[in-house]
Amino acid sequence: MIRKVAAGFLAGIALLPLSASPAQAASGQPQYRALWVDAFHGGMRSPQQVEKLVADAQRANINTLIVQVRKRGDAYFNRSIEPRAADIQGPIEFDPLEYLLRLAHGAAPRIEVHAWVNVYFAGQTSLVYVQQGDTWGNRANDGATSGFLDPGVPEVGIYTQRVFLDLVRNYDIDGLHLDYIRYPGVTWGYSASAVALYKLQAGVTRTPGPADPKWQAWRRARVTAFVRDLRHELKIEKPSLKLSGALICFGGGPFDASGWTSTSAYNSVFQDWRSWLVKGYFDFGVPMNYDSDWIDQQKAWFDRWIAFEKDSGFANRVVIGVGGFLNYPEDTLAQIRRALSASTVGNRVLGVAIYSYASTSVYGSDDFYGSPDLASGLPRQPYSGGITNQSGLAARAGSFNSLFMTQLSHAASYTDVQLGSIATQPVFPQPAPVPDPR
Image 1 (tube, rainbow, N blue to C red):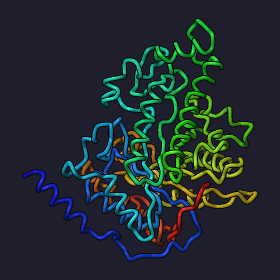
Image 2: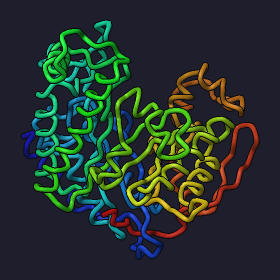
Image 3: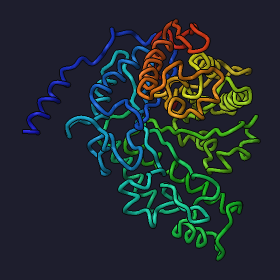
Image 4: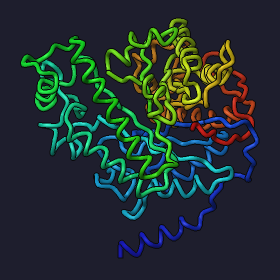
């Protein structure tokens, strides 16, 4: 009986229209307009959420959805060697990724779908960590654990690559997007297996300290080798697939290539993403330039990073990530304009990616409305605007997030709780096709 009901349900959603808005030609210049859709919030857990997501993307003239399909060793798709995510809503036959691919690829203009996967972060409650964490789990030099798997353990790379190749074989995704492709920090990498392998390969007998330059180089090389080898296998399996990754941009960026080795990405989490872009291991990288434009220091950080990303020789492999969740709507729109503009010497990147669908501004993010202490640091108060309960704040956040989809493509305005009406100007006034980064 359950199977019959589910079959009827799926037959019903199969009859839904592929496009929620009239067809428009992608008439703008080729440009990535991507939106990260995280799995810790709603977005693709149910058929209704998938339909709304595609309709919102069309309304905003978004042409690429980067959807999180593996957050903690789980799967938001049915054909997987890992467990199906527990918070998917609907019958067991409902496949979130498959349904999204059908609607997004059938939209006019077509919307690309990139499967966002957490690489080394699995969470301590995931099946893979429960079963293998004692040997595969990353350790700090004091023995602490955090739900990360250790890049220095060969079996971790073998297993993770298998998961990703299986996903690519089973679904017609346009791209694979890697996140947490790094160490948690400089003191990590001390699983017994990884340290033993390092000692063997380095010809040493003592356990290295976190600041040991050879030990740092070894850990950095482990992450790079995974990216390089995965790209090789993906290009054999599906040459048209685009490999990308979310890249660390902590603090102030370098002024030029000579400063790269002083960055946190290179030194603290061992993510040498500059070399990945220069060597073509990624079709494009997405530096996470998450800075608040209303804080002068962070605004300067944002501008320095995007200048580096445009003028360091790999702008044709960069989609600039913008942190809408840390900004007011007009500030995010301003950051997008700066990201898309040419550098002082005329270089442009492939486009932008916005984090995130669930948190488009400080008003749309539960990071703020769920934390009075965090919200108290915002410049416009009172943040609550007279709303004192979480359900009311969540409902208002949903309204802000929905309005932002319009603000991206049309002249609009919103009501700030302190300043009143604020007008906004669009950054994506017409649809645009995605560029070919290769």
